Length: 330
Image 1 (cartoon, rainbow, N blue to C red):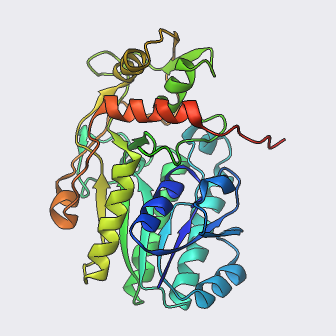
Image 2 (image 1 turned 180 degrees about the vertical axis):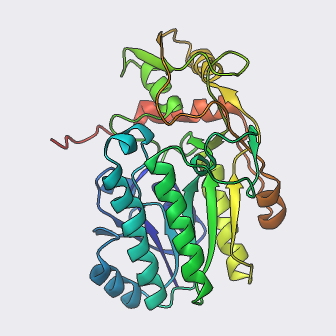
Image 3 (image 1 turned 45 degrees about the vertical axis):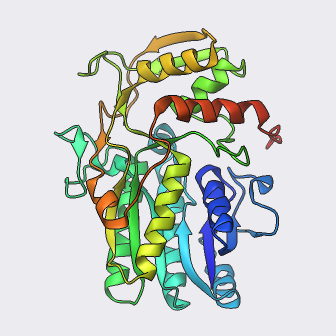
């Protein structure tokens, strides 16, 4: 049976496709290449260039390839952009996901793994958040993801579709074998920006907010290696195939690092002392959030291998040195 990976030409999606191929799975990628790259898809894997909101396209693909499972990554993910163009985020992240879920149910797809975000928790009273923590999204990006969670839950309740929702914390790093990595043009992820500064692709890095109620005044996040993240998806798929119940799981290391901690680590690993500019807070940013990751470990048996900030930075830095030149999208 085939596994469809939406957004499989993008950062996390391409790592997932490589992991599935390594596991001997039959994989199909659907990606509109708005932020992904065809070269990021492993050779031998079919890439269908299209939008997940195109139900006629999806219905044809799902039936022809006898798709058993969908791992859904395709989304817009930049919080400040979502505040500027909210309707685009609701269309791409929520409306198109609703179409994909309907197509999956119509085609009798059995399993659905959804890429959600810790941003749904918002400015939680507790730094460490559990899956039961009440959602309080602070941006259209977060709201669009939470809406899709609700759609998936409600649609599953009246169909045979089983799901796992993984709420990601801050994903970083690159494939240890150097096959793929974070390649998005004008990326906003802290570690990506930091390693770009270290190799001279940026003049420096800007820190947004130095007056948070944290140890050094900068925001604190739980950074997870992309390879450990996709391993959690493999564990989730195995769990569903074994008859596991639908559920929501946090996916993080249960350990926080501040923005300044990350910058210091990038400088130490790279040996480069790049410029750092201190600026005010950005709308939609949280002060601190860390995963309670007990459930994903106990339910899925997930055992991360790269739970170390220096390792994450080292792999990101290595990818920055070998990443293919990005084509112009002008």
